[in-house]
Image 1: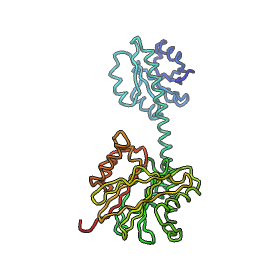
Image 2: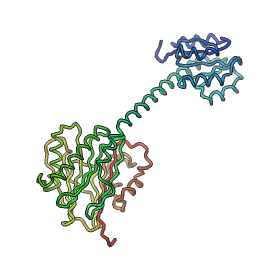
Image 3: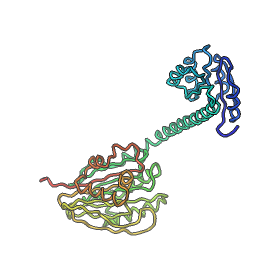
Image 4: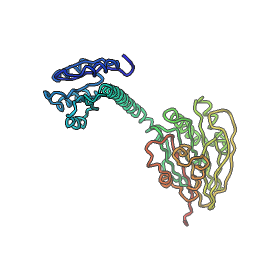
Length: 381
C-alpha cells in the first residue's frame, strides 16, 4: 500500500456502490472491504478498519442507531457518510452525532473527493490517537514529578517573611512542574540576613535537582558559617562555586547573592552572571545593582563584592530571566527599562509585579519565572 493508505469498511445493505468509487479508493492504495448493516459491528471487530464508509442509499436500517453502536465500539473510528443527492436532510443529524464527514455521490467529482475525505479522516484518527497517548504520558509524568514538586516547595523559605527589620517575599512560577529557579534567605550567626536568587540552566527535573543541592548547601552554610571563615558575599559565592564544582554537575547556575547588615546600614552583594540586574529603590533613587562574575559550577574563579548604604526605607526587586520571555517589548534593553520603571514607580510587592506583568493571564510560561523582593520600612511611614 502507498503512504497514507489503510483498510476501509464500506457498509451498504444494497451493495449498490459505484464501481468508480471503489476503483478510485483501491487505486489510492486502500484495501476495501464490504459488510451489510447487520454485520457491521462484527466486521469492525474482525478487521479493525481505519475508516468506516456508511452508505445511506437504503432505508433498511436505522443510521442513527447504527452510528451510536459504532462510536460506542470505537470512538476513534472515523465514519464517512455516503449519500445520494437529495438526502441532505439525513446528513446534519448524523454529523452532529459524531460522523466525521460526508460525500454526495453523483456529482461528477465524487471519486476524488471521497478519496480526499478518507485520507483526511485517517490523518485525523492518527493525530487523535497520538494526542491521547501524549496526554496519558503527560499524566504519568505529572504523577511522577508531583512528589518532587512537594519536596522542592517545602525547601523554599516562607513567603512573606520577616527577618530582623527586613521584609522578604518571593514567587516562583515554573514552566513545567519542577523549577530551575531557586530563592533562599536566612539569618547568619551574626544576625545579618543572607539572600540569593539562583537560576539553573535549563528547567524541569534536571534543574530542580540542582536547586535541591543548593538548598542543602545553604543549610550547611547557615550551620557552619563561623567555621567556614567567609567574610564577604564574594567569599560565599566562591564557596558555593567550589562545592558545586565538586558535584561535577552538567548545569551551570547564575546567582545574585546579598547580605543585609542592619547595624551598619549596608547591603553587600555579588553576582555570578545573574541577569537581569537587581533593582534597588533607595533614598528615593532607583538604580541597577551591576557587578560581573562567571556562573557557578563552570570553573574555578573569584567574585567581586560591592557595598551599598541602605536607607531606613528601601526596597529591592530581583527577577529571573524568565520574566523577559513574557514581556511585550522587543529588545532586551527595552525590557530592562520596563522593569526599572516598574520598580521606580513603587511596584515592589509580589502581587503588584504579577498584576503589572500579567503573569496570572499567561497559562503556559516558556521559562521558569522568579520574583524576589526585600524591603525595610520605618514605622513612621
